[in-house]
Structures are given as C-alpha cells and as structure tokens.
Length: 204
Image 1 (tube, rainbow, N blue to C red):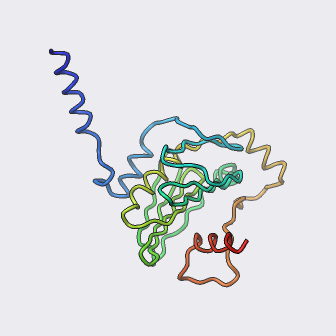
Image 2: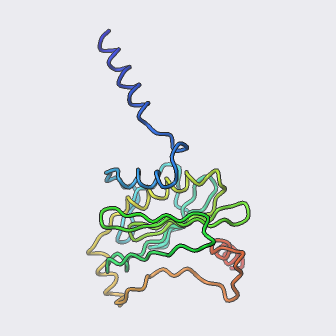
Image 3: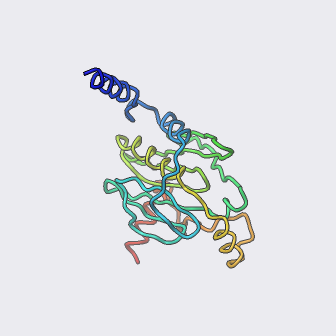
C-alpha cells in the first residue's frame, strides 16, 4: 500500500513539474531546450547526424539541404558545414520590420530566432549550431515550430573527418556557405523566400 502511495506521489510531482509548451514564451522554449543535455539521433547524412522528432518525415534529401514535413508544413533544414569548419557564426541582424527577433548563446554557439509576418502567416527563421531551419506557419503554430526546430538544430552532431575531406575535395577554402538561398531576378518585398522556392518548383 505504501509503495503504491509513493508511486502516485512521484507521478503527481513529475506531471506537476512538466511545463506545457503553450505556457512558455518562444524565448523560454529555446532556452529550456538548449539547456537540456541529450545525445539522441535517428537520422544520418553526409558529415552529420541529427534527431528527427516523431511527427516529422524527410520529404527531400540533398546532402546538406533537407526538406522536412510535419503537420502539412514544409521545414527547410540547411546545414552550413563551411561555417562549422571555420567556426564562424553567421548572425543575421534585427530589422525594423521583424515581428520577433531573439538572439541567444549556449556552449560557445550563437543563434537567433527571426520571425516576419506575411499577411496571416509567419515566416520563421531559426539558426543555431551552424544550421538553419525555415518554415511558414500560422500564429497558433509558432510554439510548435520553434520547439521542434530548436530540438532538431541542437541535436546536430558533425563528423569532422568527413567534413574536412568534403571541403578539401571540393576546394571550399572560403568562409562562404555551401548553401545559398536562390534569389529571384526581380524581387518582390511582399513575398518571402519560401514562396519563391515553391513557385520555382512549380515552374520546373
């Protein structure tokens, strides 16, 4: 009987200490996630591996650029192995038009969250651990997108030997990133880069 009571009390305390994601701000979600120590991974690729949450699947795989899908939203994951190799954080500055901007640091790594409003949707740009995730979501999905995004980014583990060989073989001896987001010839400030990518895919 005493054993059952102890188990019930432990479960109660455990549940009581668990924070609901909807009770946290976007900043708190990031800080809570990056401060947790985990070494999980279930997805391997050339020169790196990472943890992909259960709600996600890989839609497209192109070495250092992944398209992930969750709840019918496409998440663009871009791994910047050149910045990793040279240990150069590329931090985008805040702009007046940003809906939200938050810069953070952990374990000598710097990251940022940048959100821009696009009509009724929000374009999320989350950068950390020499990688970036981009997705466009509704306001009600922001916490989910940020929590899953930072979980993926912080879980990335790099293979130094593979990366060094790849960079040397491809003569990537500059601090520029491998992945460059394609910019349209005629830019329309009312559109974000995900719209251009989707339009380009339809044309192809």
